[in-house]
Image (cartoon, rainbow, N blue to C red; front, side):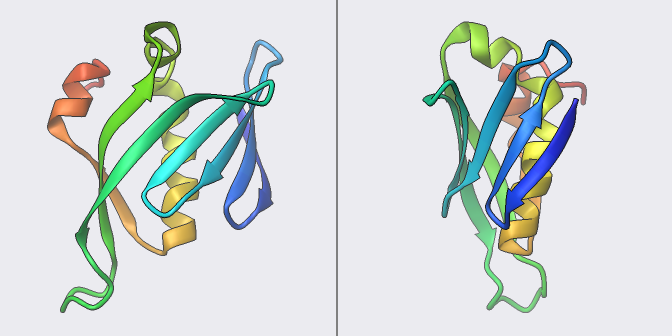
Length: 107
């Protein structure tokens, strides 16, 4: 898998099976699209803004809106997707414990 940046807020995720997913950063969401259809929408919550005493904004990935078959494939794509979101917002992202459990991510 590799990520091909398209702009500051968009990229193409090339999967090993030849599929290409479009990634787009929104204000509090990250969208995965395939063949022009939104397949996964990740929702973020701001935990610490850039105006706080800490320099770096902090976001929590709270939920993943997707059909079960797409959600089951999400775990390996999270790292490049979160890197894109983090770069765009100039912050850091953590994954909410409830979502990590829901996606069966390693602790």
